[in-house]
Length: 92
Image (cartoon, rainbow, N blue to C red; front, side, top):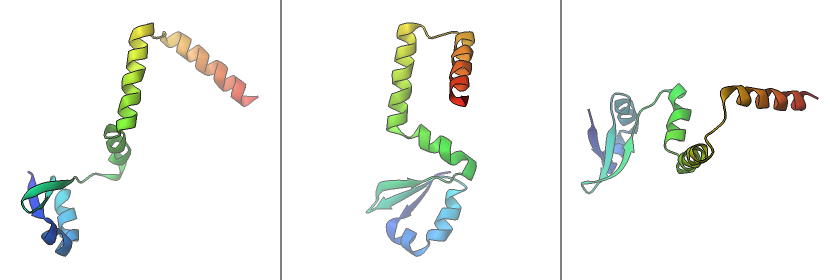
């Protein structure tokens, strides 16, 4: 359930509003217009959330996928062999 709160109410009741965000998104408004969304998350979700909303990371994924489509990728066996070779080099 989405809840709405104006900035003035948020200033006065921040702790309560953060607790409400754990149950559902809270839209922060100013003069009746949306300005931000508070989205409650668990500690273990933080990294996934940040990556999912990172423009740089998303662009990197798209570029990697385009490269994969262009070259056809490599087999799992080749990837494992390359990884083992690199790990052996690093261990020296």
